[in-house]
Amino acid sequence: TTSRGQPCWANSVNCRKLRPSCRLYVYGSLSAHTWYDDERVPHDVPQAEGGEQGDPLMPEVYALGQHEALRAVRQELHERDVLLAFLDDLYLLTTRSRVTEAIGVVTSKVAEMAGVQRHLDKLEVWSAAGGPAPPGLSERHLLAWKVD
Image (spheres, rainbow, N blue to C red):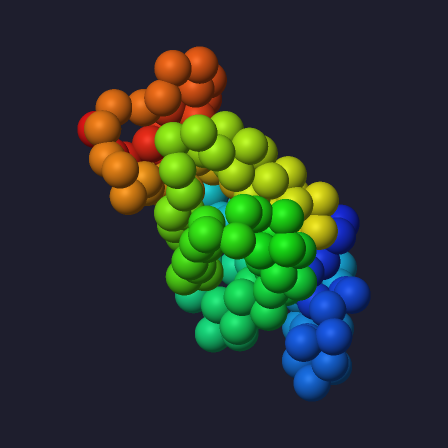
């Protein structure tokens, strides 16, 4: 989920052409849905974080919004590490010796710069050498390790 408190389009130079549409629509403020109970009494349900499901602009807004964060990650990773992204699915190719540091760089930069808290089920880490997870990999990071 990307934060509306730190909207991904607000500071991204890549989103200049989308900004008017984003501000006109709901990305610049809170929105609400109305739910009617069995007695047809309306109840407002606030939408405070993230984009609306099925919103046709959201994939582009999301991708452009995290672009600068992914560029910053690339600058901090080892030159032989590879980061691939398809919207919120991230794939990291690194070595067993660099995996803990690389995961930390990816998760912290994306959170800091794009306002996206990375769920480790949306991050996969692969090592060309294969094998089990390296010793000392935290329980949290073991979820991302896919080369066992």
